Each structure stands twice: as C-alpha cells, then as structure tokens.
Image (tube, rainbow, N blue to C red):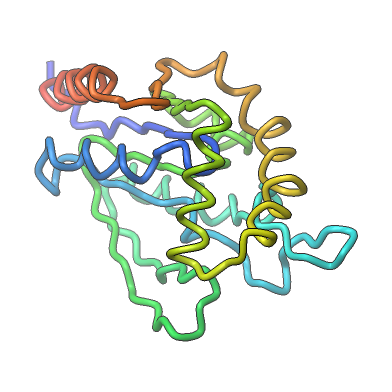
Length: 209
C-alpha cells in the first residue's frame, strides 16, 4: 500500500571517505524528483561562530560548527511536502558568489555529511542510516590530493588539520555511529556492490511510496 511519506536517510562518513562520489553515483540511478540530496556543508555557521583550537586555527571538523536547529527545521518542512530555499556554502571562498539552492520534497530525502548523526534530535528522525567507511591511509591520501589541488592548501596545513582536527573528530563524533548504522558502505577500493545494494533499497522504498 502506498503511503506517500518521504523516507529520510542519513549518510555519514569521515573526511575523504567518498560521500560525494557515492552521492553522485546513486543520483544517476534515479530521477531528480525521486531523491532529494541535502548537504550538511550548507549548514555551517558563520566563520565568527566556529570553534578555534589552542593555536587560534578554525576547526571546521567539529559538530558545534553546524546549525542543527536549521537543518531539523528544513527537514521537517520537506517531510511536510514543502520546498526549502537555502544559500550555498562556498567554504569561505570570497571569490565564489553563493547561489540559492531549492530543495524539493521527494520520496527519498538524503542528508549527507560528516556530522549528520551527531545531533540526537536529528538522528532520531532517520528512517535509514548509511555509513561510508574506508581505511585511514586511503582517506588521508585522498584528502592530501584534494586539499592541495582543489583548495590551495599546503602539505603542512593539510597535515595540521588532519592531526589536530580531522582524526580526533572522526574518533569522537563519527566512528561510534558505525555500529548503529543500518548499512555500511565499504569504500577502501570501490563501492560497486554497496551501490547496487543501496540502489535496490531505494527502489523498493520508492515503489512503496
């Protein structure tokens, strides 16, 4: 029996675990009106509200920097069948003019990000929890390549963030949720089999909607 209720999915994983790539691939399997993908990144608080470490360096790898109140408000709105307008997060790049993004209600609403399981209230809202996992040496290598080529960071800057922000946050706020997830996506090499599994799950949900 069709219920016309949106199915809320959370997708969490460490830095450079492959969340973005997985989202891109799963999105190819469905029409735009079937899956609404929301990025946690667009809900970062302003730079002045971000946590700083003992050296005065902004720590973006901490859940306190995320506006969970706004996320929950927008998710509830989507679950009621109403669209949501937000402003794109540009990673504090002054050369990029932020665009307005409109999220439309869909049978599957997928919220992805580092800390989508860190807020108890938000975590309780999910119908299904996905956790993407990869070996630490692989994720570090991916992050080094990404941040030095795409974000103009030096090797020292990347390693400072990794040792002081990324790794501690993963151990404290991410890894504990792996055991509570409904399905773990293994992405040390590739996630082809996992993609097939999740695609089948989503198709089943949509068929029931």
